Amino acid sequence: MARTKIVLATTAHITRSILILRRQRVILDRDLAALYGVTTTRLNEAVKRNAARFPKDFMFRVTSAENSALMSQFATSKTGHGGHRKLPFVFTEHGAIMAATVLNSPRAVETSLYVVRAFVQLRQLLTANTAFVRKLEELERKYKHHDEAIAAILSAIRELMNPPVPKRRPIGFTADLNDLK
Image (cartoon, rainbow, N blue to C red; front, side, top):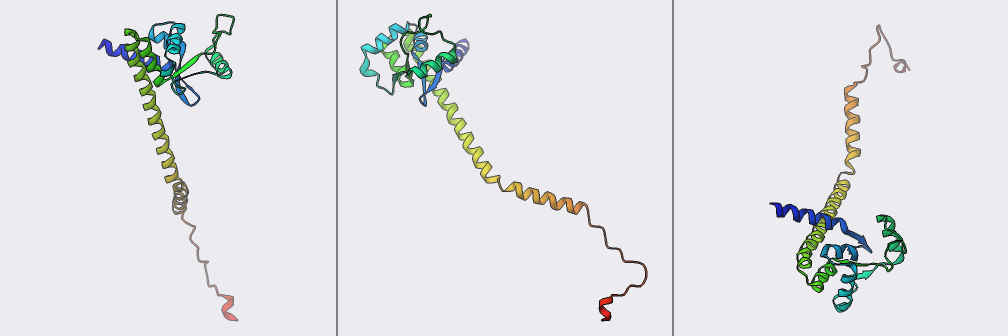
């Protein structure tokens, strides 16, 4: 039981580290290095030595604009004040798994399982959310015209609840003057 709680906490921690960048779910090199128990420099060195294993859809360097957005989002210090001097790399799901294989430490192998679970969990949430939105739009289209019909029914019920005042026949004899012509 205790191991399951650790797995969920670790998966939740990893899930918080995953960002959306260029319409992809990615994790920063420093966050991935921390998960695998190595320095960012060590991770990037291992990646550079095995560059053939990391095509552009596995890993890419962020642009200056993206880095500025990340710094303001996470309140990271600026360059020269303890911050990063180079633009960070980000790893997609496949790149994060490949990084575990090039590091080849027991912790990297074990943590890679949690990384996979975190990415899968996010994918399932996204799929469920997409299906929910699609169903909601379908219901809106289906029942769009029902509002008008319900309003007409309510109006008719209100009219029936207030019957018209019956026409009272005047007292005495009345003649229709049109018949005399």
